[in-house]
Image 1 (spheres, rainbow, N blue to C red):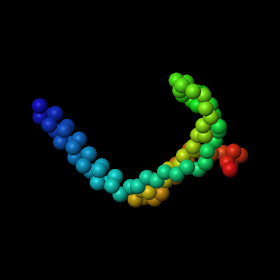
Image 2 (image 1 turned 30 degrees about the vertical axis):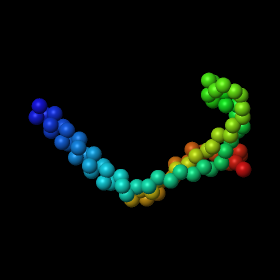
Image 3 (image 1 turned 45 degrees about the vertical axis):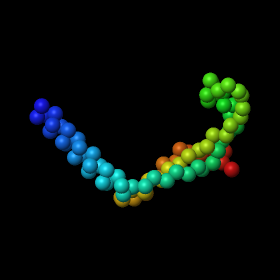
Length: 81
């Protein structure tokens, strides 16, 4: 019983510490283009009707206290507009 309480207290403390440091971060989302068109039934086989869709290529920028982090999912230069 004492071990469970100790574990719960440590877990609660870590959650509190993590929440205070996470508040200093911001996440931004942007689209770096689209590719396609694709038949939606290729991506979602259970979709009832066939139609062409354009798929967005996303990227995220994380503003962290130690600096910026850019995560680009990659739109190849050869296919960009």
